[in-house]
Amino acid sequence: MSSTSANNSRSLSIKTGIVISSLFLLLVMQGCSDIHNMVWNKADATIDGHHIVISPCRNSYTRTINDTPTDRNHIFGCGNTIAVQIRNEELTVNDKKYGMLNRGDSIVVKSGHVYINTKEAVEVAQK
Image (tube, rainbow, N blue to C red):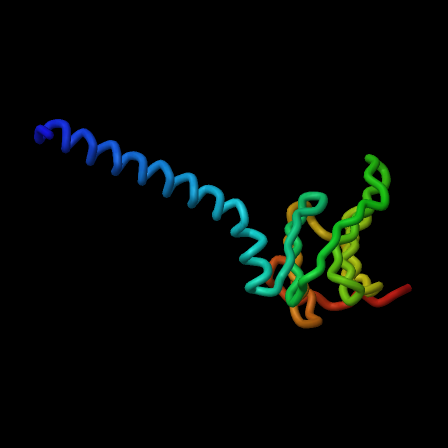
Protein backbone atom coordinates (compact mmCIF):
# COMPACT_ATOMS: atom_id res chain seq x y z
CA MET A 1 0.00 0.00 0.00
CA SER A 2 1.42 3.39 -0.93
CA SER A 3 1.78 6.20 1.58
CA THR A 4 -0.81 8.27 -0.32
CA SER A 5 -3.32 5.44 -0.11
CA ALA A 6 -2.62 4.98 3.61
CA ASN A 7 -3.03 8.73 4.26
CA ASN A 8 -6.36 8.76 2.36
CA SER A 9 -7.56 5.75 4.34
CA ARG A 10 -6.53 7.36 7.65
CA SER A 11 -8.17 10.65 6.63
CA LEU A 12 -11.40 8.84 5.75
CA SER A 13 -11.36 7.04 9.13
CA ILE A 14 -10.89 10.31 10.97
CA LYS A 15 -13.70 12.00 9.04
CA THR A 16 -16.00 9.03 9.64
CA GLY A 17 -15.19 9.14 13.36
CA ILE A 18 -15.93 12.85 13.50
CA VAL A 19 -19.28 12.41 11.73
CA ILE A 20 -20.31 9.53 14.00
CA SER A 21 -19.22 11.44 17.12
CA SER A 22 -21.13 14.53 15.97
CA LEU A 23 -24.31 12.54 15.37
CA PHE A 24 -23.96 10.88 18.78
CA LEU A 25 -23.53 14.25 20.51
CA LEU A 26 -26.51 15.68 18.64
CA LEU A 27 -28.72 12.82 19.82
CA VAL A 28 -27.49 13.13 23.40
CA MET A 29 -28.05 16.90 23.38
CA GLN A 30 -31.70 16.38 22.40
CA GLY A 31 -32.33 14.74 25.76
CA CYS A 32 -30.21 17.12 27.84
CA SER A 33 -33.09 19.33 28.91
CA ASP A 34 -35.02 16.39 30.34
CA ILE A 35 -31.90 14.92 31.93
CA HIS A 36 -30.99 18.33 33.40
CA ASN A 37 -34.47 18.70 34.89
CA MET A 38 -34.40 15.21 36.42
CA VAL A 39 -30.93 15.73 37.91
CA TRP A 40 -31.72 19.17 39.30
CA ASN A 41 -35.26 18.18 40.32
CA LYS A 42 -36.95 21.15 38.68
CA ALA A 43 -39.46 21.89 35.96
CA ASP A 44 -39.66 24.92 33.72
CA ALA A 45 -41.95 26.25 31.04
CA THR A 46 -42.76 29.46 29.23
CA ILE A 47 -46.42 30.34 29.50
CA ASP A 48 -48.01 33.43 28.01
CA GLY A 49 -44.57 35.07 27.72
CA HIS A 50 -43.49 34.27 31.30
CA HIS A 51 -40.68 31.85 32.10
CA ILE A 52 -41.70 29.75 35.10
CA VAL A 53 -39.48 27.45 37.17
CA ILE A 54 -40.73 25.16 39.94
CA SER A 55 -38.21 23.53 42.23
CA PRO A 56 -38.26 20.89 43.56
CA CYS A 57 -40.48 19.22 41.00
CA ARG A 58 -40.58 15.96 39.08
CA ASN A 59 -44.04 15.53 37.53
CA SER A 60 -44.96 18.82 35.89
CA TYR A 61 -47.95 19.61 33.73
CA THR A 62 -49.26 22.52 31.70
CA ARG A 63 -52.94 23.23 31.24
CA THR A 64 -54.69 25.94 29.24
CA ILE A 65 -58.12 26.84 30.60
CA ASN A 66 -58.80 29.69 28.15
CA ASP A 67 -56.68 31.37 25.50
CA THR A 68 -58.70 34.16 23.92
CA PRO A 69 -57.80 37.83 23.55
CA THR A 70 -60.10 38.74 26.45
CA ASP A 71 -59.51 35.73 28.74
CA ARG A 72 -56.06 34.14 29.02
CA ASN A 73 -55.86 31.51 31.73
CA HIS A 74 -52.95 29.04 32.00
CA ILE A 75 -51.73 26.71 34.75
CA PHE A 76 -48.27 25.19 35.18
CA GLY A 77 -48.02 22.78 38.05
CA CYS A 78 -46.06 20.08 39.78
CA GLY A 79 -47.96 16.98 40.79
CA ASN A 80 -50.72 17.94 43.19
CA THR A 81 -48.49 20.15 45.37
CA ILE A 82 -47.84 23.31 43.32
CA ALA A 83 -50.07 25.11 40.84
CA VAL A 84 -48.91 28.36 39.20
CA GLN A 85 -51.80 30.10 37.47
CA ILE A 86 -51.56 33.15 35.23
CA ARG A 87 -54.96 34.57 34.39
CA ASN A 88 -54.96 37.80 32.42
CA GLU A 89 -51.49 38.62 33.83
CA GLU A 90 -52.53 38.00 37.46
CA LEU A 91 -50.29 35.49 39.27
CA THR A 92 -51.74 32.94 41.66
CA VAL A 93 -49.72 30.17 43.31
CA ASN A 94 -51.63 27.50 45.23
CA ASP A 95 -54.69 29.77 45.45
CA LYS A 96 -52.65 32.68 46.87
CA LYS A 97 -52.67 35.84 44.77
CA TYR A 98 -49.39 37.63 44.10
CA GLY A 99 -50.66 40.54 42.01
CA MET A 100 -50.31 41.59 38.41
CA LEU A 101 -47.34 40.64 36.25
CA ASN A 102 -45.63 42.76 33.67
CA ARG A 103 -45.09 41.31 30.22
CA GLY A 104 -42.10 38.97 30.26
CA ASP A 105 -41.74 38.69 34.05
CA SER A 106 -40.13 35.46 35.21
CA ILE A 107 -41.53 33.42 38.08
CA VAL A 108 -39.65 30.98 40.31
CA VAL A 109 -41.39 28.86 42.91
CA LYS A 110 -38.70 27.33 45.08
CA SER A 111 -39.20 25.46 48.34
CA GLY A 112 -42.45 27.25 49.13
CA HIS A 113 -41.28 30.75 48.19
CA VAL A 114 -42.42 32.72 45.14
CA TYR A 115 -40.03 35.01 43.26
CA ILE A 116 -40.88 37.44 40.49
CA ASN A 117 -37.81 38.56 38.55
CA THR A 118 -35.57 37.20 41.37
CA LYS A 119 -37.31 39.26 44.09
CA GLU A 120 -39.36 37.40 46.66
CA ALA A 121 -43.05 38.13 46.20
CA VAL A 122 -45.58 38.55 48.96
CA GLU A 123 -49.18 37.47 48.90
CA VAL A 124 -51.62 40.27 48.03
CA ALA A 125 -54.30 40.83 50.65
CA GLN A 126 -57.78 39.83 49.50
CA LYS A 127 -60.44 42.53 49.38
